Image (cartoon, rainbow, N blue to C red; front, side):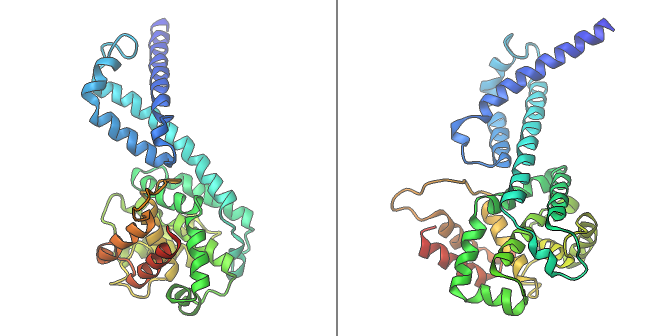
Length: 311
């Protein structure tokens, strides 16, 4: 028993040292403005790229004497994963409670759940899809897009313009709710999107209609309070618009906003004379729209909005 206690005590000390080391890296000012998932990616890359320089220090008596780099990385990455999961859970709950209103669900038939019940179920849903690496990574863009207000500011300009995207939402998709509720509906669609990776893993960017249909059935079970039309749009955001021209406009917006925000650094300032980050991103996206399955006309309008507003 005493031997087991000693081993347990040694392991606890190792974990504590790993936590202290990772806390310093996590709090690095250079990572300010990054989401938990972006921080995790950056720190993983830092540890892997700087292994030769870090190993002499981390294998010393002050840290993990006698341990191989593989064992040290295991300790550090285990702490990093826990740290990210904790921060991600807080971020997800904050996004749901402060940045999305779910009143739109009450406009759909056969849905009697209260907005509060939908929030609770969405929170559980995000916890589930955060359990697998592929869908966990895919959550970064949606959470940033919704949580930073990026979706709000673009949707506001879309309504003001009354052009292509507004027509697609109102006349083609026939959304009969208020503009604020359409914005929230788009946000919900974006947050549902990562569920495709929960079932497909690290496949290609796009999926087939047959596979998407299967995911819709599974996702609808997890989100039985959410109107199935919205669940379907979230899944369909991973379809190619060129091959599936009837994909919902909310799905097309979800695809673009999610991809845009995967690399978004919140609060980043643009150097004088440099092209704004959104304008630059949409410009590149227009050239690669077929690869990502984007709606080119939608990209052109969003690029115009970014240009007009210095985004």
